[in-house]
Image (cartoon, rainbow over all chains, first blue to last red; front, side, top):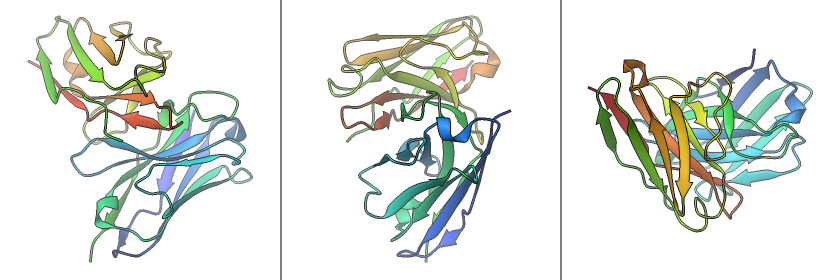
Length: 123
Length: 110
């Protein structure tokens, strides 16, 4: 059974940093790209970032480029999102999502999602 | 890049069919056959319902179907059931090699 478990969400001050983690199980981790998708309270889904199965390719939304860094540790089956220079508009539930395309390239279609971790940016 | 355009809400009675539209541009919906649809119940994670315009993942009811014409994709739910009441989001791959989501549609089963 595929499981994605996010952690690391917290209250952070504007300009601060947080690191989110997503522990994965139930599939061959290196064979699939992974992404972060966020949802502000009461709002719709917003794609944030993606990483290929090998970690060699990364992709970012314009809204987070230069502030967020996606990475993965294939020896630990874990995905990360380093969030720096946080802004109030980054407040959201952050979901970890698994690509449905075997092979590691990012098709950015998501067949499994975690339950999300809440990031609140406020002073 | 603006979100794909979806109606804010749609409604239907049990047993009826409804269609949710998703309008993009020639740089996303119109360019690729990579449109997906997600269902999200309150407080839950999204669930993939349709991918590559019209393909259903294993386990998704055949009451759900997808199509596309030019820059507009559509999700049709036939034989509406109470459990279908949820938010629905479309998504498309774009020429920037990133995905974009629609603003979401709230489906109410009357």
